[in-house]
Length: 432
Image (cartoon, rainbow, N blue to C red; front, side, top):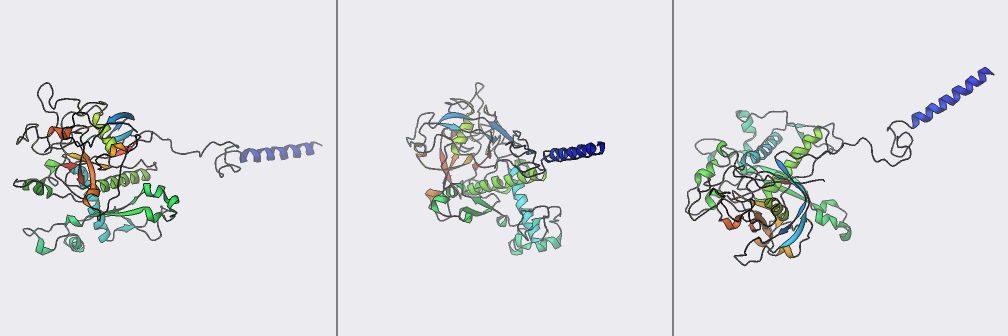
């Protein structure tokens, strides 16, 4: 009788333990036995906890509303900045304009990646199951000795031919440095079901963008003016490392933002961290909201209505009077952290260089854009006429009079043009 009781007890105990083990842990599929959910909807467990993180070099801009448009007299009577109240979602913005040295990092990356490809410096990534079969990754651990004659001979396709050398110096042809990436056209893809097009390739636009700035802008922009030293030195000399990059087209600014996104998120992926939202150019509404710094009706980022403070000091880099470029402390551009920032902590939102936005220039777009994160974009092509290539620039520059420094003032440049007075800064949408 005792033996029977012991056997029965052991059997019950074993069954109980098996039931307990089935209810433990998270090893099984969601909803299956052994998942640890106990029949409850708990969401996928073990996911990374999100923590708000301000990207390096950026400042946090809170959500808010503002009245876009005319903040002063419309002295030209062009009616291109009519008033409209809008709401803007929070975002991060570069505290300063992108500098020559920051953009040079992009150029050097493209140069090295193309050189590695020519030298066949590839490595298969066995740890990446999503990699296309046979695809190769650049092996960045390998070094390139650009002074080695044998290496230079292998890279000859990237250099000027000998009959184009200046004073016998071999130089790389920077016009051959191209950055390739794909753009997903979200707006067209959003209507894919209505258009009954299922092939996603229809909404992928491959981009091939030359990355080196057009240094000739300093000569081309000014007739009967001696600016060759700026052409020779502005982008390459260390003296200008912290000055805003110029001579970049709208397409180049977007290419930089795409590279910057991949550069950061690839690093985060290597550290097993989730990626951040993309870097991009600001919309016109976001730019004006940031420029105002919380001062909803002020004409300038610092307030106003004057361009000097109580001590008589000029508050931005622009052209105060005819023929007087140096009165504000800078002859051409100045360091990106010059002058006082606005109340959001942003430098040179007026003056220094005008800045590209993502917005298509249309004279009266404010009458039909949405009042929530207003945006108007157009995917231009090389075949479009000049009017369709117009992109909004904001902020005025070192060569402009004070009128163009006002927060509401709109202007444009063509997307495929580069100027000595147009630069950019990046933005990243906040996830909260």
